[in-house]
Length: 255
Image (tube, rainbow, N blue to C red):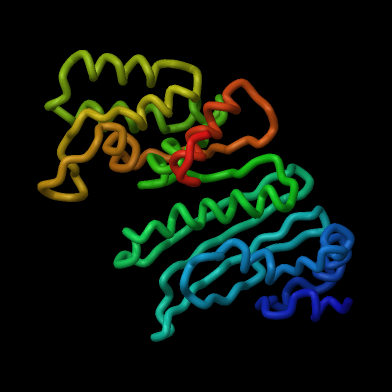
């Protein structure tokens, strides 16, 4: 198969040059038998999202890494979403990069559909983990979905500090609840993030005036905190708990 045929329907900037030929070789070795092209990878990632799309190759290397930007468009040629996705066969990881959904479409459950698609693609490719960089609302969303930061990221990033700053600004929180959150933040175990996300005490939202939200959402989604984490498919200490959360929050079931 020619390289031009392999990347059919994918925008490929001319800057890749010889690197593209090397990348095409490993892609065909890995996916040629199942006729899985770069466009198919992108199409699977936006499955069940009711908009046309086009995709662009952002990066590809001979080390079995590929990254794509996918832009949706509606009947008026307006972008309903924009996202970046990548995978690394060497580390067995699918990276969920940025995802921007148009404001008027954010209550349609598309975020969970995108997450479900990434999960399905990772399993199809035989990868061992999903990776996220959780920012803004994603810091809450991904914790609820079972993703966990690494110990390094949890204990040495800015996440803990920002959670405590947000907690300090919430003057209506009763002392027992405040103490519980402080103990969770003080813990060196990243799994503490789940308990913080699950805290249901109601507080006033800073972003949605006159609305109450859960304390967990306030501490993570409205604190400017950010963290990097994964959902692991291989067995580990929190495997069952992690996948139970993911199944419930993203897949809609909890076996």
